[in-house]
Image 1 (cartoon, helix red, strand yellow):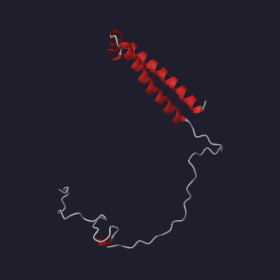
Image 2: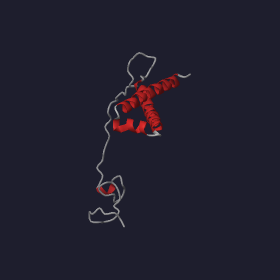
Image 3: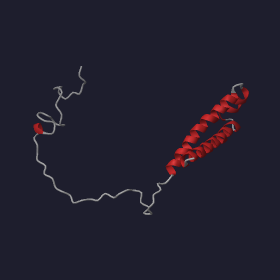
Image 4: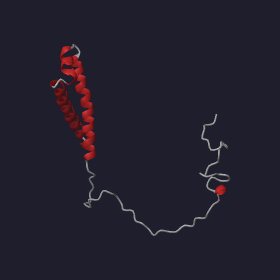
Length: 130
């Protein structure tokens, strides 16, 4: 059986074990009158099972996620540096920037202040078009 499947099954058992403890605490301390509801109703055991089961799903998923995130990157070399290849800075090269007029910028002819064509002359009011 693959290691990841073994790990997943182990985390499921731990998650459902935590769910059983959590559900027992809920019943024992009568949180939200849950003890009275479970034992006073004919469908109380079904509700108890559903609380246990769905909390088990949540706890198992969170337990597995925490375990996977805590796994280290295992590589063969012993440099203890998992940041990857360093980026080497080269010499900076100056570039020439020429001044462009307002109407001859990146937006083309008549591009305006922000490099786009004006939609209409609305006098500075920003109402949507009808």
